[in-house]
Length: 353
Ligand code: SF4
View 1: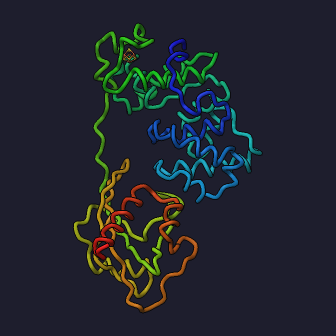
View 2: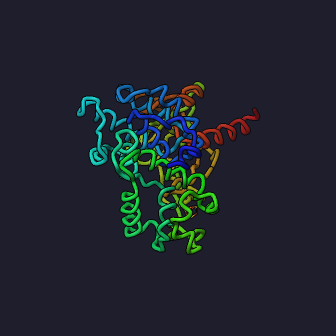
View 3: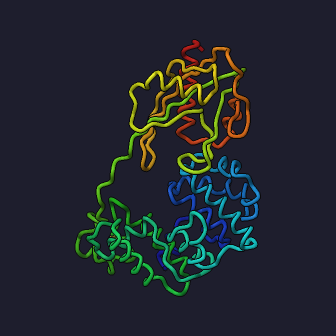
């Protein structure tokens, strides 16, 4: 703990005791780099300073503030859980690890982090950094993502947590992983647990943790249409759950695999279905590829042309004719912004702007 006092990372949520704010920081840190969270956390907290403020806000407002952090399911879960706590718990966060686990989006790591830091419960919080440190300290030859390895790490980590300042202990272990016991270059000479580390004494620290080969992300193609009317572009909102849930995008449809060329008949049918009669697909404007955790998505944007037959689709729930300014303010994925920019610049080239 002495090492932590002198070497801990200075982060905006350090020293925070409000469980809601700790929860937000942990949700952000789950799949986003700490340097990005360090910048984005203060603005998010300024916008939604309390559980009540989060529960009162619309999902659209929360998603818009979450923009650029990716994995929007985390924001949707935060919002849903905040409403659940306000409606069922009278606004008081659950105070134990087990009770926290019942909230949407709260898994064992996050529950352990909130319970130990905010409520002083003696429980472990095993994130990726802690897994790496523990696999080396224990000299674990099992694949890190196997059930026996996960069980061994959880049990050992739990046994190590002291009664006094369990939250600080957990954060010290995380910081040790982030600052000293680095993935490729563990700095054993400076490590406070040097003498206790079985991996270091066996000389295996650079080979640990043992990892199983990952499956490559599955390829998909998202074909989208850019329909323009009076300087406004048609957007649609995705279903609230699933990939890019609740986010805005150009209307489109997803197919498995990476398509070199879409079938023209299918393209025409989908264009009319998504935009209404009178709309047909025009030339391809852009194609960009973005990789998410499990999917590699090829975005293909087509111009949509109107033959003048049939009324253009109206703005209504889940559908919006948007200006450039609207697009900037809406909750839109980073990948979709890139596709929008690529299509816009292709259009400008076509029009000689
Ligand atoms: S001694 Fe080396 S391998 Fe062991 S925990 Fe410390 S930095 Fe990691």
